[in-house]
Structures are given as structure tokens and as C-alpha cells.
Image (tube, rainbow, N blue to C red; front, side, top):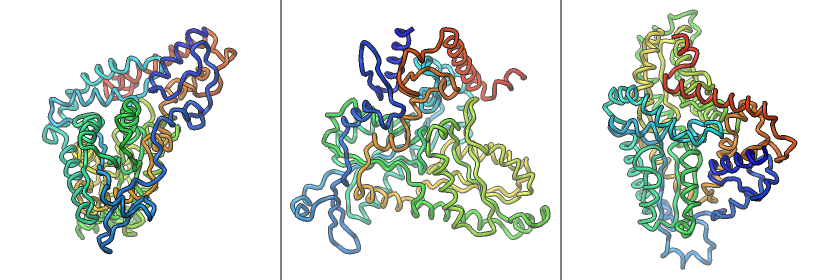
Length: 504
């Protein structure tokens, strides 16, 4: 029994990309309760360059016509200015298939990511096989969705334009020449390809900017994990390059104002006749205009494990709503859930019928967690949700566009890059730890279901032979984990709950 458990520990630790180290080859001693306080984790952190000082970049101030040296002592400014480092900006995003032929490969990469679909630890080696099976079954339906928006995702086109405009804005406002790169998580150009270009250009100071306003382990966290693995495997290769990460930026005044501007434009488009139509509904107390912020959903278990996404999303919506007119009703919902597990509620496809029942007629839907148009705005919101809204009695539908290349957004991102160069840097590792990325990964599905595995993967106390499960308990636990995995697989394939599958 001890040998079996030790073997499970080895597999689990390798699956978590050596985040926890085995303290002994003969006997496994103790695991601490949290990754952050673990000595093995601290040892792992020491392998990374700690950047607690600002990146050393001289930035001309346009208004003053002088050079403000960022992060340098005054006596070093004169001699350092001529040797300013080559600065790069890496924009991270989801990616998407450019043609219908790319859909299956894109889906495979998506479902093969353990940050998206987390399987029980013992079944994790099967994830590539399950990802292949699910992606091949879902590809035909997904291809139809992409065909409905032109055959492919426009996310790369918008990301490239955003990169170009941010680069030009930095040059124009600050006189600083930077190079911009795009790193996609699930399709070309992959993050690894962007890193190759960064190396070829001999970038010495890199600002890593996820194009997700709010942090989640399933978006920014997953992309940062890829960077962390690359930096760890090729430490000497990146030893001369300093980097800093901007994990989230949902509360920036410039971003908030850009969202307010786009929403206000849609609110102002309601005609006097449409406003009068709303006033006649019900007892007349319903506000004449409504805004529904539809955010991308995440599994509820992620939030329970420390993912800051929900809190940041609610704070973001609150900041934007505070700048909207008083006669606007505000609502928040979550979309794009996958599989059988509980996701953040309320769901958008539940909120729309509810608003219709309440008598809402004038509605602006805002894709709050997306900065560029893609399948979830152009197909899920514009086609599926609009049809549902109209069936529910919401007659006057508006959809706020994504930020895309809106000038206020581009300028705020340019300012953000400069501020990131000036502030104390945060490494990829530090950003992951601060946002509980590893804590979530180290809590596999069996533990979230309450199955005691006596500290496997270093979570849940010291490893002690007296805590081992009895044979019968271990068998029941494994059967339960297999059952959960089979349920996940069936529901991913069919796109509906297991109860619906059985009843159909």
C-alpha cells in the first residue's frame, strides 16, 4: 500500500510540472498544507530571477521634454541612458481557428489544457486521449458556429491591430521604441513562437500583458503557466532578459472609461418611442434602459479554491456602473459554460428570460470579459442570446461592441506598459502565486469531491502511514473518480447534462 501511494505521489508531482519536489527517494516525509509556505516551493522560486526593482528603461516625458530614468540611481542616469535595453511587449490571448479546417485542432488544444478541464489525478494521463475524442465529436457543431461568423475567428486580426496601435501610441506619446508580440494559448501564433521571436530580437526588458482585464486561472493563469514552464526549462536562455507581468487591469480608470463610452453610445441609441414603450410596461417603476454584463464563466470550484475572477468581475462592473446614468438598470451574468460541473451563476441563458418576464424591453448586452470580437461575442451573444432575448419579449436589443481598437482603450494600454516599466516588477512565478494558480492545480477533482487521499499531491497535511485509506475506501474513491470522469466525458460530447442524455 505504501509503495502504491508513493507511486501515485510521483505521478501527481510530475503532472503538476515539478511544482512540489519529493523530499526523499526512499520515503516520502512531509508535505506542508499550502504551496506558498512550502520550503520546496521556496526552493523552486529561487531558480527564477527576482525582479523587485523596476525595469531599467529611460522614458522621455512628452510634456517636459526631459528624460525620466526609471529604476536607476541619479548618479547612474547619464551613463546608463545611451545603453537603454531593447523593450518588448508580449500580449497574451486565447487564440482561435482562422478557418473551419483549424477548428478540431483548436478544440483539442483547449480540452487538453488541465486549467480548462481538470481530471482526477489518477486519470490525468488520459487527458490527451479524452481531448482528442471530445474535440473530434464536437468539431462538426463548432464548425457550423464558425461558419455562421465567416468561417473563422477574427481574434488574431484584432490582436495584431491592438499590438500595432499600442506600439505606435507608446512611440508617439513617450518616444520609446518597443516591439510587440502576440502569444496565443490554443492556436497560432503560440506563446512559444512569440518567445522565439523575442529571443531573436534580443529583447532585454519584457512587459507581459494578458489581454484579459480580469485574472482567472483558466485564461491569464493558463497562459502564464506556459511562460513559467518555458522560463524554467530554459533558464540560461532567458537569464539576460528581465520581465514583469501585469496580471489584471480591470480597475484602471482608462479601461473603465472606455467601457463607459461604448456602453453610453448604445444606451443613447434607444429612440423616444422605444423608451416610451418601456414606460408602459408593468406598473411604470421599471427603469427605461437596462444593461446586462455578460462575462465568460468559470467553474465555481475555481473560485472556491481562490481564483480572484469573480471578485474582480464584480468590482469591475461596479466601477463601470457607477459612471452610467441613474435611469439604467444593471445586471451581471456568466456565459459559455462547458460540462456537468457547477459554473458561476447566474447564467446568461437564465437571466435573459427572467428579464423578459420582468418586462424589460430595452437591453444593451455588454461582453465584459472580452477585449476583441470572437466566437463568443459574434455567435453566442449576437445569434444565440439575441434569439433567446427576442423570444423572451426583449424587443429592443443592443449589443455593445468589444473594445477592439477603440482609441481610449489603446491609449490606456500604452500607458499601462509604461507604468509597468516604472513600477516594481512582478515575475511570472510571483503572478501565479499571488493569484493562486498553483493552489487550484494542486486541488484535484477527487479532493474537491471530498475524497480523502491522505495528502496526495502535497495538499491536506503530512504524509503518514496511519492516514492511508483502507483498501475498501480506496476502491470506492477510485470508482467515484472514474464515474465523475465518465460523466464529464459524456456531457462534453453531448453538450448537455447526463440527466438530459438519459431522459432523451
